[in-house]
Length: 217
Image 1 (cartoon, rainbow, N blue to C red):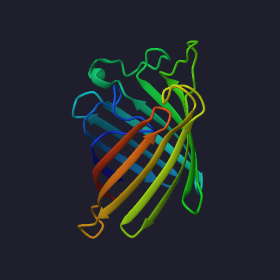
Image 2: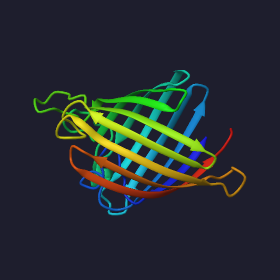
Image 3: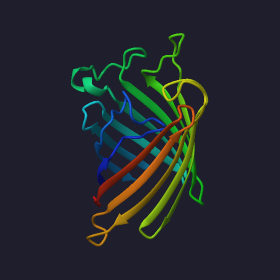
């Protein structure tokens, strides 16, 4: 079991940042996850200090073989109306759920390929049918001792939740240093992250800090 508490100066996700979805203020994002065998389950939550971004996201992931992962994330993000919305509503046109089906493969040299498609919840196209908004990503992670580097390029193949048109929507880089104050029982990563969305010509700089609490059950 791992408990995680994260503070970020701005929530940034798949090329999306400041605006009506995630607000214009820092965010507080706690989560907890459980890993056993080939399964990983957990729940993430987040809220911005300007009361615009509110989210809760349970997930289930399964790794049938080394490197390969399949999963479902239910991103429930009604924003300022969080306490006044129907959490059981998964209707295409009215739901605040965005259910992502995810397939990823991580090569031994730390290159990961990922595809995520919205399969349930709110995601209508211009004709009123399900859009199946999709995000494609290649990312690479490097770690040495307490320092880690991360870079990613993400794209969407058509107009949808992420962008007004198909194209590269996320160029991202992150540097992180993990402080180990109590012989690895608690980890305190601090990081800087930059993201750029070429389709929207949007740039975001993010700084943050994390408290990680690992437990063996």
